[in-house]
Image 1: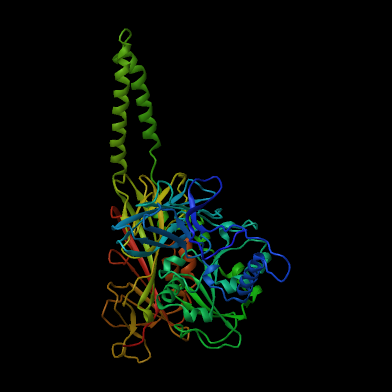
Image 2: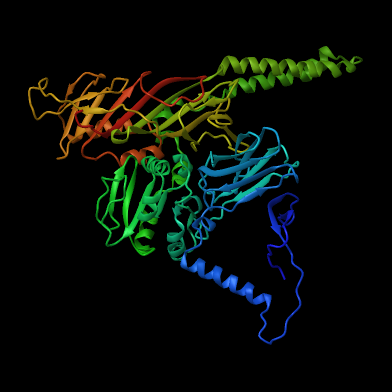
Length: 639
């Protein structure tokens, strides 16, 4: 019989091991009490009855919802095994109950240092896809903790840097190292737990629900979809404060009461994620018409169709009955209205589908040159070597002539390749900027394609917090053995490979006060009904279109920063022609997102090109021959 007792201190260091592995994953403290004498039936109680009452009380609290939500919401705590009496304790806990297949996976690391000295600990993460084991994503983190303090670190573990259409999930390995951690004893294994019996795998959107909504609705939804449902529980009282922590989700459901108690930083992160293309559902009781705080523009209705377009995504006002959602409506949203971000990235892009890819092209393979080189090498190392360098009677010279010929041929080949391909890379990039003037923010999505020669250094940094994904383009080259690494905002590995054509998809939500505003005066137009605009952007815009509230289209350009521009009446045909030209510069994933913004009233649409066109910088050795950008968003009122 196992029974906790306050009379004896717990024994420490008893480790719970996973079968077949030597590394302890979780440290537990237990006290095993010796069995007491069994008492008779004359009114005495048995210890077992007390244990039963505790169990019943626990079950009652669970059913009535009085237990802490985070006991069941987020991922389990993992205690790292440290040396006894070291004064160091380390705990690792994921924010969510499951790992998405792309983006980032947030984890909180707590380290208590009472060792008598300052120390720092390292964490290396390794994510591997289940069906593409040769594609890996690695990252490293460092945690300095002064003596006598406890450090709490929220980190973002990158996963799925190069997605594939058929992947259902993967494994993430976290390896801690540093003072008081025995060799190979700081390992934590995490894995996705998708139920994809329906066979759709990566095409299934990754959903997030808070515990109350999850417990009531997940099972029936999973049953209705024959198990083909992927997602995680999220704890509204314990959320990451960085929008990239939600980048693996396609949609998130939470109750309006939970939204109201979320902290300002976490709420802002959720809104930034929605602006970057997420679908946020705030679920209120049907009789509750009060808009959620921080979303003044959200429709006050209570039907499932009410939504506020926000950036590239939406914030929905969704109805609930207690914790029960309209499951038919949720199923319809999952099946027909959500596109799994994982699927967007995994879709293979062919040359004729993308202007940038078609212009950059694949590395030329000089078949004739290599054939002639190999033929010459064969003649030199064979007949010439045997007949002239190592004649009969001097065959021992083969021991040094053959290696010298091979070495010389190899060096010559390297020189010829350098002369043919050169060093560095050339490329083209295109970005779309969705301006959110009311929040002093913008959402940036950037597509880029580059063709590399010989790359000496492939490490690079991103100045802005971004999500970086390798696009799946048809290059004729196998992706086996690719390894992507990230250390904070520094990247390395196979993001850029020598003699390869590669493409990346970047997403960022920078703060900015740049915008396009209505101008106070209409004197320059001569007509008070003509819109006059002024730009506070740092670069000129070539062409500007504006769709007014009545659906009318206006156009003008160029728009120089600080100089008012009067727009003139235009028509839908001209706008459509301009839009089709601009959109072809983007890959299918970005085109899908920007096409949903095309017909919004009160929006401006503009373009820029050349070196002044804003972009997110990556590898410095790439010579960007062309760069383009689209700018869109609401026109700001006159200041």
